[in-house]
Length: 249
Image (cartoon, rainbow, N blue to C red):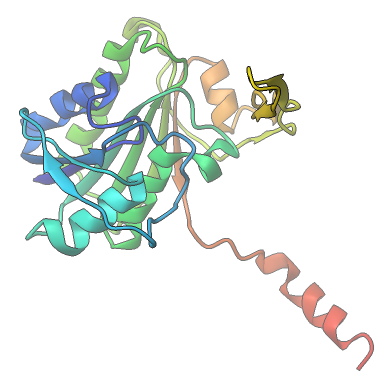
């Protein structure tokens, strides 16, 4: 296989090195990742400044842009082939529920999916890389399964891995996205110059965390496998909008 590896924590993050180690046994591996940490960048593209591609001593390509920039450039000019698989991560922290809307890790995978490349985003649910070896083994197993049994059509898969020893995992569980309560309030502070500044507050607690959700899987110490789609249309409300527009005609 030919595998494109990316992330949102930056090309020198511990997680991407672990992911490369997990995928290299399965084929040719190319890394194209951001120069700096881009957590929370979502699907943003840099349209008003030029981007540069450089190569590190270890062979990784890095770009002074967002995770989506990296995948977009890789697939539209940098590489002379279409990858068989794109993997993103391993992220330093969870991407559960609405996190997926903000996540640079998931955004990089979704950019590959938009180009027809099967794509997987991997996240370790606790920060500081605790039990990164578990996430590495999970990634290795899923990519091995993909190689042995490729998907019939491209899929965008969001994988969250509990921060536990591998022996304590309860298995792999297909899930849907759960939902969180609204985020905590912003944190206000003052600069040495007397200016008010604000930090985005912590994420909210799960609101919908049933057994079939990604939150529920993690709670039960299972690896969460959530297939995502990029059609944001609310098909159930199309007729409601039509009636609303016709109400005073």
